[in-house]
Image (cartoon, rainbow over all chains, first blue to last red; front, side):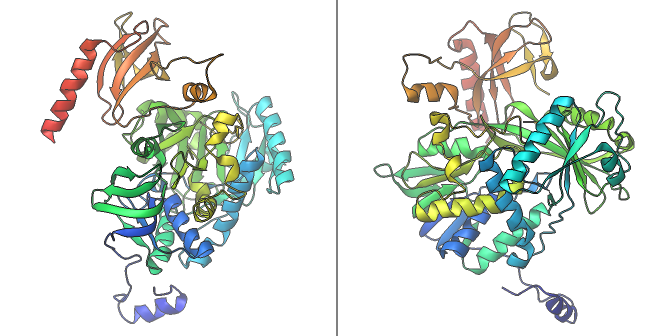
Length: 415
Length: 107
C-alpha cells in the first residue's frame, strides 16, 4: 500500500498522477478462511479492521452481496454524536466518536471528520426537561455536552428562527465534539487498510445458504461457491432477518425504509448539525453547500430501498418553521435505505443460537456514527468468543431478560 | 405510495389514510406460557424479504383493523381481508402463488 502524503502527492504530480494504485485489491474467493464477515459496509469492514489491528487475525474474508459501502453506509446523513441517555449507549457511541477523531491519521485516508458540533433543539417544555436530563446523564458518563440558551443558538446560527410561533426554541443540547464525516471514505479507508493486510474483500457475492454441523456452522454457500470457516459474523443491517432465517433462527428486528435528501448547493449558512426531535427532522450543510436533511422512518416492513413520498414532504415541512429559508430551495437528490429496528432502538452485538455465528445488527436509524466503536466491540466478541465491556449489554438475550436499553424516546429523532 | 382496499368500507385508501400495525396472525402469549414463547410473541418477527402478512388500521376512514398481504421487496399488494380471519383466505393465497410463479417465469 502506497502511503498518501503531501510528499507522495508532489511525487505523483511529476508522473501525471498515473502511478496511484487501486485503494483495495480485487480478490478471489479462497476455499477456507478463519473468519468470514458477511456485509462490506462500514460496520463489517470496521469489524475486519479491528480483528486485524487488535487481535492480529488477518485470515479473513469480507463478502458482500452488492458493492462495497453500497448499503446504508452510502445512504445516511453522516451525523456523528454520542449524546445518548443510557450509560451503555453513551459508552459505545462515545468510543466510536473518539475513534473517529483520529481515524484519518490511523487509516492514512481522509475521512473528513468535521467536529462542527451537534445542536439538538428543545421545542417544548417537556423536551427541554428531557434534554436537561440527558445533559446531566452525559456529564456522569464523561460525554461532553452542555445546555445552551436560545439567544446563544441564534448567535451561532443566525439563519435560525427561534420565535416559533408553533414550536419556539426554548433551549438546546450542544455537543461541541460531534459533527459529520465523509461516509464513503469511512468504508473506503477501512477497505484499503484491511486489503493491504491481505484480507479478501469479495463483492457481488451473496450468501444463499448455511451448512451446519451440530449447531456449528461448517460452511457458507455463496453465489461464488462454498467457503468453509471457523467463525462467521453477519453485519448486514436491513437484511439481518433474511440471513438469520438461513442460519435457522429469528431476530427481534424489523426492516423499514429511512429516507434523506439534499438540496441544491448554496453558500454557507449553517456551520453545525441541527436536530429537531419534536418535529422529526435534522439538517446539516455539506462541504459542497447542499443542505442535507433527514427525517422519520416509515412504519411498515420494506426491503425495496425506497420510502414513502409523504415522509419527504413531512420532514421538510417540519423544518420550515425553524428554517424558513429552506422553503425556497429545490431538492437535488433523495434516497432511502433499509434499516433494522429493534424494540428498544438499541443495537444487537451478540452471540447467536448457533455456536460460532456472531451478529451485529439493529443499529436502526443511527448506524453511521457507531461504525468504529461497533467494529471495535464486534471484533472483540468474535476474537474472544465472549463480549467485552462495550458489547456485553447489547446481547440478544436482553430482550428475554427484560434488560432493555431504552433509547426509543431518549436518543434521537424519528424512530 | 401504497394503496389498499379496505375490506370493510371498500374504499381504496392511500397509505396516508392508514396506520401500519406490523406482522399479522401472531399468537398471543400471556400467563401460563413459557419465557421463550412470551419472548417470541413480544419480539421475534419473521420480517421476510418477500411475502408479508400484516395488519393495517384504516385510521382516517372507518377506523377498523384489517389484514394485508404484500411483498416487501416489490411492494406488490396481493389483497386485503378482514381482521376476523385467523388465517389468510385461500383466494388470496392462490393469487400469491400465481404471482410467485409469474415472477419466476419472467426471471
